[in-house]
Length: 296
Image (cartoon, rainbow, N blue to C red; front, side):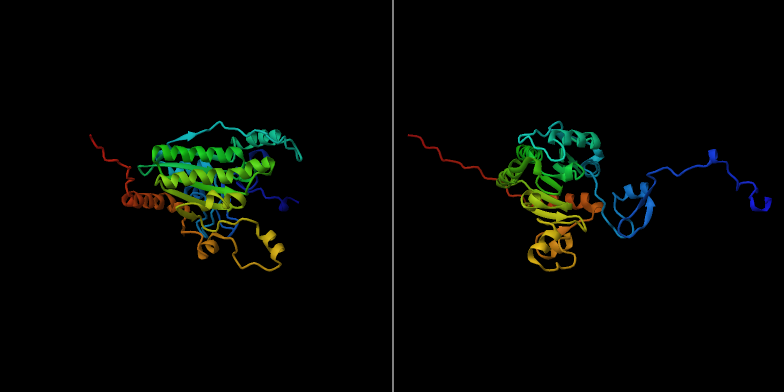
């Protein structure tokens, strides 16, 4: 049976000499199934070269490509969630938080930082979906509030990058209070005449959409992002009707007047630079009240 064996040089390879392809070298687009190298995918900021599908990325990734030379100062980096309600579902809330911290390396579902964007000062708060679905709890609300305070005190524009499944059920009413808290802080920012830009990414839903995500001086979004309050399945079951095609996509939301524009991630830094430069040129100085002094 020697005819059945391939004995030519270069064809027969002993098992111990076979080389497996290392994991993490290739990326397959979930939309168009195009395969590309991970190096190319990262160069394109995790967008598909063929169909422009925008993958979800972490807060650290946004910081790296938005801030000049990847240089920024993080705010309130060590803030942790407490357990005010002693909540238990399939596991105790503190244990769930600890397990998520260990798995993700994050302290909670939002990170905030300040630095330079093409030479312009900027404060950014960005959410991480992989931390309990980017849910909004007390820490998320407090860190966003403090980031807004920093922007107001230093007169720096504020950028909020939202990605969330909504309020965190483990904190119940405490999480819902963050909607009012962050909205009040943004009102103070507006009174100070400081720009607030809200970037909605995939997905932005629930109480986050119903509060700070939709309160920007400019509300913008990434292509194809899911944006809404309740999910499509819940809405369909409630109204008993089929929903329009593309319902709750960024493009649908813009068409109905809730977004100013949609921006490709690869163009985000330059678009923000143009927008902030324009706002600086048109800024009207705040006049202080003066009282005429009289002498007897």
